[in-house]
Image (cartoon, rainbow, N blue to C red; front, side, top):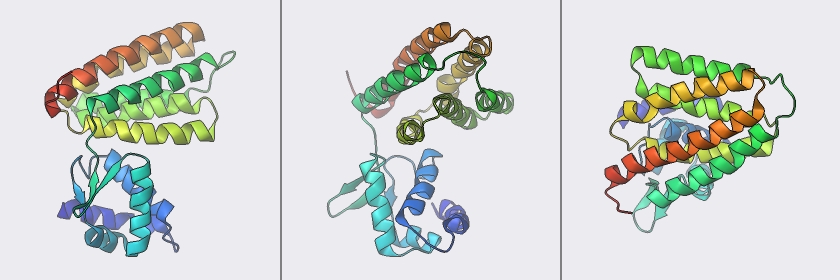
Length: 231
């Protein structure tokens, strides 16, 4: 935790001269998504506020924003904690992903599509796989799907899915075998990218739907085993 707080202090420059709650929330959201504060971690107002150089009121407002996004939870007389998802949460996240991501692909219109960011996310995944960095591979997969959603050209959709993907990372961080979870995604992403590059939009949507359904099954299987829940 001490090391992570030192790294968090490096983010102080991102706040600029005005330490708004929204900017603080952006930093904490990114750090939570990256696993710096794993699910179940209690967030200390004094430590985090000191690292970022922000007031207690600003930090509490940032906590409130992230609680609204379901990334944090406030427990009476105990403090604020990074949320631990239930299996039902994971299932609902994937329902949302299927609705949004498939709709984005369906609405792409006529090719060619602006796939540079999607292709870069695939390349990022290949680099991570070559070095055996399975956490980075998981991050590249999130980048792939964020780039896919961005093809809609909608700031509102991007904002919605930013929170959904950050919440999904809470599930990824409790998985005990990240390679088993993330490695199969790379081949799926490569296949989906190729289909879109070839302009076969309807086929890409079908591939994505199957991909997300099978991904849900895999995540729920390992997540349920990890958190000790039963169906």
